[in-house]
Structure formats: C-alpha cells, structure tokens
Length: 241
Image (cartoon, rainbow, N blue to C red; front, side, top):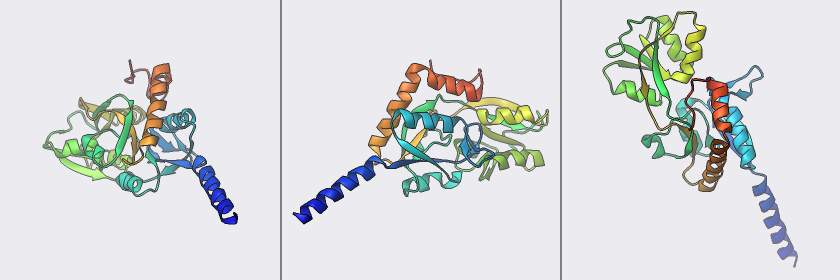
C-alpha cells in the first residue's frame, strides 16, 4: 500500500511539474526593432510584445533567453531553450535542421545601405551578418562577402570604409538610415528573400508548434498581428490581407 501511495504521489507530482513547465523563448536581443535589450537589460521590441501575447493566448508560461545569433540554432536543438523568436526567416535550409511555425511577418524586403550612392554592389565588398539569408545571397553573387557576428558590426564596417555596403533586412536598416543624418543611404534595388519570419522549434516539439500556430492564426484573424507590425515597423510595413 505504501509503495502504491508513493507511486501515485510521484505521478501527481510529475503531472504538476509538467503543467508548470516554462517555455524558454530564445532570441538574440541585438536586432531592433525585432528584438533588443532595453535600459534595464530586459528583452524588448516587436518580438517580445508578440511572444508575450502568443504565450498568453496559448496559455503558456514563458521566459526569455538571449543567445548569440551564430549559435542560435545549435543551442535550440541541444535544449538550451524551446523556441527561436529572433527575426529568423523561414528557408528550406533551416527547415532541414529545425521546424517552423507559420510566418508571423510576411516576406519582407532586404536592402543595401552605403555611405555613397556610387557603392559597388556587384564587385565590391558587402557586409552581412553571418548565417543569415542575406549573407548567403551575397556569397552567391559577384561581391566579396564580409561577415560579422552582430548586425551592429555590419553597419560599422560601412561607416569605417571596410565595406562598400551592408545588406540586411530593410526593416532593421530604416531607423539606422533615418538616424544617420545623411551619412548612410539606401542604394540599389530591394531584394525579396525567404518565406517570412517564423518561430523555430525542435522537430520533436510538434504539440508546442501547434499551440503557437493556433495563437498566430488567432492574431491574424482578429487583426492584432497587423496592428503590432504597424506599431513597430510603420505604416509602410507589409501586413496580412
């Protein structure tokens, strides 16, 4: 009898622990306005507000974890957190390593920024953040790719003259160009890459993916996702129809 009671107690405790499990939301914390650290060192930005709302709708307890971009997928698959919500575009290459929810932003433009409108985008040096779809795009062209671990370093390379241009998400570059006082400018044509931005999860976490998918769908249907996109990226941002 005592053994049976102990077994039952352990089962109940395990069930309670499972119900209280915390979903760890992995992000970079260095890619405004998608995600960044505020003055208190807390994760902020579009994806923080979005992620908190998705967790509320899915009735999940979530906490935020930051991780360097270049190891963000390996640290998901090794179990250091449970999701990636970090401005990550959905691509076939990444989909071979992890699973994705549906996108929570439509496919958006990538763009070049330079210090001169005469920057050589095809034969010059173009900076991009490592392990991004922009870096892959530059590598496949005629320009020399200069990779950096952080997005700030890619822009700094243009300011210093180390690179002729930076190639990145246009949404990331717009506020930087606006704040540069004319020092930096958009050059060349915008480029459409990827299948929009989604949450990355381990391929084994199908139930968690379905929970977040349902929450994203509900935000699309009631218009709150479009409102959030416009709030963080402006009236010209691409939204869902």
